[in-house]
Structures are given as C-alpha cells and as structure tokens.
Length: 343
Image (cartoon, rainbow, N blue to C red; front, side, top):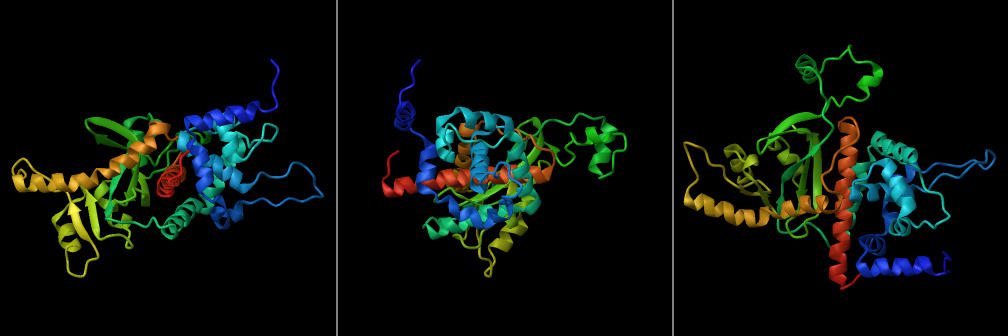
C-alpha cells in the first residue's frame, strides 16, 4: 500500500482527538528540571574512538517513566517504543531514530540504584510542585499498598535461615541471583501475599505523593508512620486504624506537637466502638479515603504491579519511579484543569 507524506501526522492527530495523556505530560512538564540530578549518568564521548554516540540521559529517564506508567518489562518497553507512535512522540523520536534497547534501559536503572538518584529525582519534582503552586494542603494521609514479587519456593528450613540472615551455602551463584531474600510474606483479607510494601503520604487537597518508603511486606504499617510525615503541610494527619495507639495520639496531641491526629479508632471484641466513635471514623474516612484514589490511579493503566527485579534495592527504585510517574501525571492533570487546557 502506498504511504502518503502526511500519514503519520494524520494518525497522531486522531490519537490526539481520542486523548493522549503523554502529550499533556510533554506540554506541561519541563523535563530539564531533572538534568542536575541526572548529570552524573550522562556518558561522555571520545571522537577519536568513534562508534555510536550515547543516548541522551533525558531520553532514557523518560523511557523509565513510560515503563512505570504502563507497567512494562524492559523488553516490552523497547518493543512498545518501536511500535507506538504516541510513545515515539513522547520521547521525541522519529521513525528512523535509534531506540535504547532493553539492556541499555536495565543498565541505566541500575545506575540510578547505585547512585541513589530516584529519591533525589522525587524530591526535585516535589520542590517544583511547591514552586508551581501545588504545595501540600488540607492535611496529609498515610497508607500502604502491597506489591507482589515472584514467590520464592524453598523448604521451611531454608526460609527460616533466610529470615535470620544466614548465608545459604546450598544455593549456587546462579540460583542465588534468582532468589529474593528481602521480600516477605504478609496476610491481607485472608490471603497470603509475598512481596513489598509501598508506604505513601499524599496531601488531601491535590492527592500528590509527598513522601514514600519501601519495606518488605511483613513490616507493619505502624512502624513507618512518623518517617512519612511532611512538616510543611497542614497539621492534620489522617490514617486508618492500623496506625493508631494511645501513645501516638497523646504525642501528636501534645501542645508542642506540629500535628493534629485524625486517626481512625480501632474496635476490639471486648471493647467495641461507640456510636460516637463510629461517626467520628466515618467523618475522618471521607478525607482519608482519598489515598485510595492514588492507589487506584496507579493501577488504572498499569494494572496490578508485579516487580520483576530481585531485592529491596531494586524494588525501591521501581516503586520510587512509579510514585514519581504518578506525581508527574497527576500534576499534568491538575495544571491542565487550572489553566483550562483541553487535550
């Protein structure tokens, strides 16, 4: 079939009419704000040696954002960028341009891990949010979601030794490379789940994630509460009953405390909640439930996330990038509404 000169533009125009969230990201986000943190990863070239010049660091970073938004493996990411016009336009690539392959993306993400740059990139964008007028307002919410990883099937004796931190000499190096010894089991709604937890703290007004922490799934939500609170937010702090204790409430309600506890109370078999407590929980939950909107938005396009890396260091990078990707997309939506822009 004969290909017309403007076929690509015609197809992209139809994509725009149907709505392309990636176009909105490029229109409203200046990706150059991340360059100071990404500069250590920019490879230098030696003209005397020749060869293909290295890929731009922003191109590879934006590919990781695509990967996080759509929950793609490295191989699938490479294939989708080669295949999808909207992905190519988002990355500024033409039909004849080279695309970083799966190994290049893996190596780039590994460098982010080694240099601890994901947290810096996340903080960089949070500072940008404050400057853009989207600072945290109306309080903050603390909650966590469980992220699955492939189950490590070993005898009970081996699992007990792993929990104690012992070295498993029975594993060959190749076998050890495939064993995630940092992930743990937890139980939720009667189901056993193996993986990690993504603890987040979004603000109530904008539902933008202000802080996060990654732990194994067995770590109780209660233990990471204080580390997630942001001092530059409204003092109101919302959470479900998993985070409450009398000591915590007393400490947060002290005269010198910067916080106002709005934590849901917990009922017990021998001490059920009173009608007043249930009504108070209901009122607090009207705001606390907004954190579920964040988790739902993260799942909406990508579906249930299954981490493909091994170990908590890689899980921290992947989940940190997913939280950053959510903030990028959420900001673009809020900014377009604020400015009355229609995509």
